Image 1 (cartoon, rainbow, N blue to C red):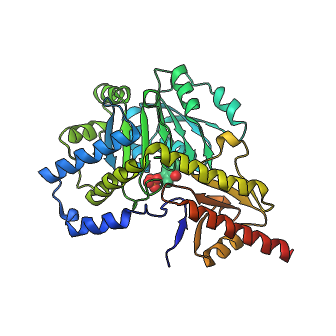
Image 2: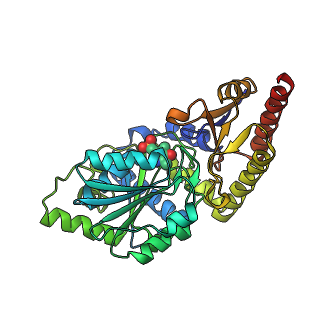
Image 3: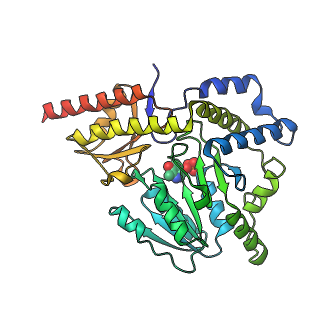
Length: 366
Ligand SMILES: *Cc1c(COP(=O)(O)O)cnc(C)c1O
């Protein structure tokens, strides 16, 4: 029986992914030489697809790394000499803040758990800050930062670099590339692909900063520093032997999604989210972790479960529904539901029915 996979990452494959994987194997894509013409053409067409789908301006570079985590680490290495500020709305934001400290950066952070509107509007960025990092959708809490707040920060602090993590919201999130210098994501969440590929989108301002640091501060240049990413990308290549299969799949999935239409995907995703939140509002056993509606995630819905999440997860599993447990210390208290383009309207309706059945059983038992 086909599983309904609502875990937030890796998540359910996009409906056409299996077909493309089979095709790739038939065509021996996995043996493609990464210095040859075929790769040149794959690299170029994948990049063109991403650029057109996400509306990335020509001025911005698109690079391929191994994961979103790597994209973040390389950003900190290449663009920050000392000072960075992390806006933390959950465990992923916290992880990147810790990563900056591990890299010996002088990292500071602002933690936001509620009062999102006021807190985001009153962020004070220290003069010395070089880069501001935001997790647009924090997958641990389901906290979503609408684009306008990111735009406001860049407008107020145009000389600082702004980096956003859109791992669990891309491709169904509006990104204003004129107000964002670094955009990073991996493909095993919203794109519905196997893990093992990170995408990093870089503005000219960030590129210049990386060049300046390389020249004047002589910071170490790892193989995925912005310098080498650009050097190889200019030749339509990567430094290392890349994940050719995933690049191939990313191109085809992106094209499939484009055929559906970016706007339509977003509308469908929001409709499914609305259905889920409507159920949650009525439910007597689950409550959203983020209370303010404008800051509730459309793609990863996180709720706490009265009496703990374990029984619910087991109940759903028996009905062939695989829901994510809470993140870290909240493992047994929360559940996390992925609502990506891969998840159909029917799957979400079926899930809501299962959640309702569980609730009835709980009420009866109590
Ligand atoms: C999953 C996730 C990451 C990490 O992605 P990897 O591809 O595993 O490196 C980073 N940020 C957010 C918000 C995530 O959901």
